[in-house]
Amino acid sequence: MPDLTQEQIRKEIMDLHHVIYEKFGYEMKYLRPPKGEFSIDTLKYTNSLGYKTVMWSFAYEDWNEDNQPSETSSKEKIITNLHNGEIMLLHGNSKTNTNILEGIIKEIKSLGYEFKSLDEFEK
Image 1 (tube, rainbow, N blue to C red):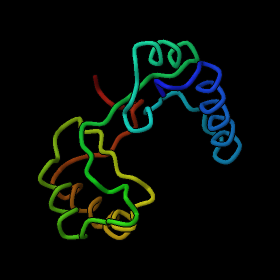
Image 2: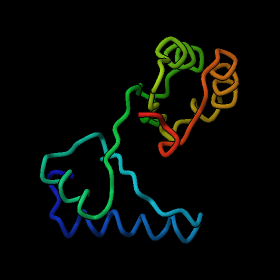
Image 3: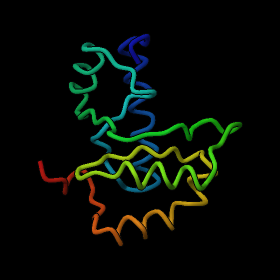
């Protein structure tokens, strides 16, 4: 995002906003900058568009479709890095994540954790 003009940023965000609203009836209000790349100016600008920037507190190398991590090592990384208030970044293009997600959710819940939306998150 730091390399884009304000107009390019606005177009990318608002195009996505409209698609999400049309398909799911959801008004986006949170934003995660692609690759976590941002600047003070991009934060100010996206805030002026009505978005709150939210980063993640856990991620792992799951985005490369040509080099997917094993299901076993992925489960281990996810479970051993759990923490209260965690915002977990799992990429939807990951076949590994697709295969393990249901089991991971069940295991995390069995450990006493809850899943909440950002709106429900206690500050």
